[in-house]
Length: 410
Ligand SMILES: Cc1cc2nc3c(=O)[nH]c(=O)nc-3n(C[C@H](O)[C@H](O)[C@H](O)COP(=O)(O)OP(=O)(O)OC[C@H]3O[C@@H](n4cnc5c(N)ncnc54)[C@H](O)[C@@H]3O)c2cc1C
Image 1 (tube, rainbow, N blue to C red):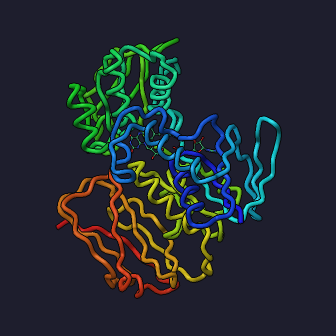
Image 2 (image 1 turned 90 degrees about the vertical axis):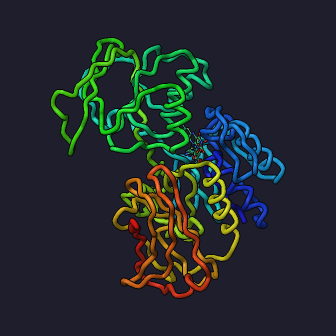
Image 3 (image 1 turned 180 degrees about the vertical axis):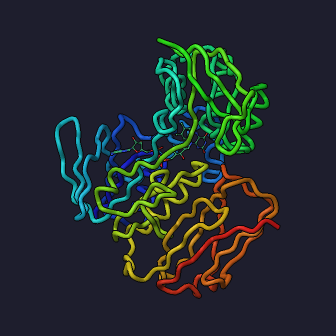
């Protein structure tokens, strides 16, 4: 039995190790870069691994721990190998330095990560000078390539990658003039707002956006204004004399390969619908990590990908034996979106909310009937929360049920 894992980031490595430990004869890990680790080698700050390894690690350290697990498990690793096509019969076409290879797998686990939303996707008016970077690219240039990307910086979007990059730029001697966030609440985790902005006196402008970029060859300034109901509030525009604009406006799952398989792409995750094993509607094809939906912490990525790796060697259920699950109201995203029935495995349901909520109650319902309920002291859009079903709750779900996850403020 061959399990092919596409992508050697934390999700791919964790899934490959779990598949091998669960008894897969052959596991092939295919990574397009020259090393394993995915995004982690550029995340040189700490805060990784607390749940997965019980230790506070930096990104490169976490990647190295996982790499050691891969090496000790006897997994075959192809580096500098990019999967360029995926076929319905589970054949992968791989481009390598020595030519094209065809891999006929029994199981494919896609762990291809996400890409950053670029400027074109958010249509900021103004000129097209140099000096505009996405946060992840800026982080890579500073931490891996050792480059200075700018001296006076403004940031659009308060996602975690941007917050961490704002702190890194400050430590490197740049002046970060501020962070504008379109929403009335921050996009990143509370700990990053404190540790990356407040601790360094970097102002956060909520309900603000960049309305214009100025400059001919290089960014010379940005205009920032307050927004209300999608419109600029007159008289609130400010000019920031910066040479660099960084965009931290979200990630989108890489879905090109799974689209080739004809899988339905959900509009609210940008990826295929998966069950509690992260298996898609095509038996034997799994999608994990940021490729399945955007996770908050890499520990959750590795933990969930291990579930898929372990399941990849087990017998597959009949695709018709399933219920569906959708987010409702203030729930923005839910994972899994399908629930396999009759497999004696109550799902762990992961979700994100649309807006910050105080004390609240999350309910899993079917036709108005509550199957499970859990209370939370607070929920934040930046955090992935979870609700684990008990066996007796799972057992009342029937094939064909349309389940909904809702949240009620208390
Ligand atoms: C810039 C940035 C900073 C972050 N900082 C933090 C943080 O501080 N703390 C935290 O907990 N999380 C952080 N995260 C999130 C964390 O890094 C991700 O959750 C995690 O890396 C996702 O793992 P992944 O394996 O799904 O994707 P990735 O790490 O992106 O790995 C995907 C891998 O797939 C490979 N790949 C893609 N397509 C192909 C193909 N066709 N063929 C072969 N290989 C392919 C890629 O080269 C890559 O190595 C950050 C993420 C980013 C983007």
